[in-house]
Length: 327
Picture 1 (spheres, rainbow, N blue to C red):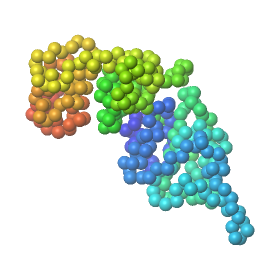
Picture 2 (picture 1 turned 120 degrees about the vertical axis):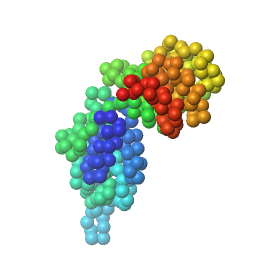
Picture 3 (picture 1 turned 45 degrees about the horizontal axis):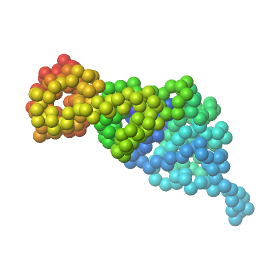
Picture 4 (picture 1 turned 45 degrees about the vertical axis):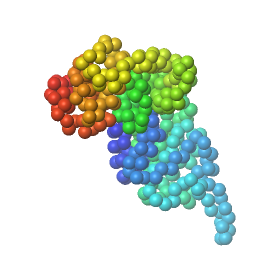
């Protein structure tokens, strides 16, 4: 299921307090999508890393009350008021006894004497067994307490998120050029670093730190693996040779249009980000000289950045000229 559909599904299931388990390979943003959905619904979130717990950590410790009976003191991290999401992250990586301690909490919303408040829902997430991540087979009794959702990586939706989140233009342009490298994980491959949405976010932050140029290939390889890093650093070399947006805007009819697809991807991303309501006529003059698919890519980026572009006469003329592609 794509991320947008997962958000919609979570919204529906949270409204009826139905426990949900989100499955997917490492690094694709399972935890993040739960937090984003909770935030969009104005819900608190309590993130519990089940793999770090012992069974007694959930049940709490006993105390002797004045009536001479023992009572269990629930841990302070379990919610008692308000409304929100109790997020059991990496649940299937927890030891079997910890998973067993979750049985009652997930289905009956209780744990010993503790009662989960009415306006709280349980959501869990974990890696699949075939991903060779740390995991224990989930007992069928616990698995049957959840609605299960498989998380799929979708390049278009990741790029839309990346635009709003501030992921670097170089990374976004490269993923448009090589979408298969957004998530390049093979559990059979013996490697410590691999390309994933999470590791490309690392790369974006790395570029923001302005590292020494000779260090970039090794640092990128440490995040996304050697193969993806070699392609990305080659793409960066092309990016550094591109004309500046101001040069293209100053002479949209004179700057040569390159033939290299990688360069066209980079230029389309760059000029889409550079388009404003003030320079749209000049950027459009450049866009009309591009191959149609790259012209569309440029406009898609421009509309993401400046939605009011679609209200202009220039955009209407361009859309009319490219109607056969936009259908």
